[in-house]
Length: 94
Image 1: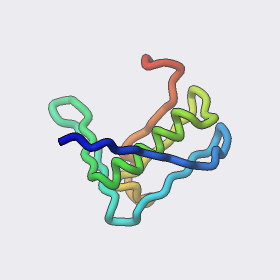
Image 2 (image 1 turned 180 degrees about the horizontal axis):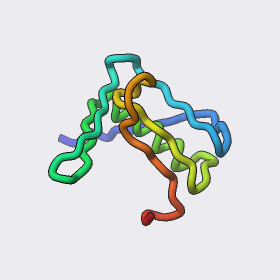
Image 3 (image 1 turned 120 degrees about the vertical axis):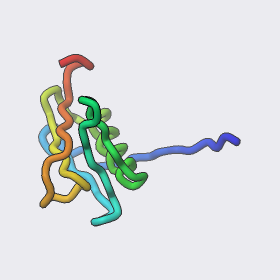
C-alpha cells in the first residue's frame, strides 16, 4: 500500500558562508562512515536521515556557492572525529 508523504524544511537563509542544523540530541542521531571493500558506506538511523535531509535541502535552495563546505562529525557530535565533508561543487564532477 502506498502512502503519500511530504517533507518540509523551512529555514532562515543565513547567507553564503554559514549553515546550521539541529539534531535531536545525543545519542538519538546515529551516523557513521566506514570503508567496506574500498567503498565508503554511510550508516545512518532515521533521525540522522532527517538531519541530512535538512542539510541537503539548505544546500540545494540556500544562498550557497560552489566551494562552500560543511564538516560533519560522527553521530553529529562536535567532540567526535570528522565523518564526512560535503562540498558544494559547480556540477556533479570534481
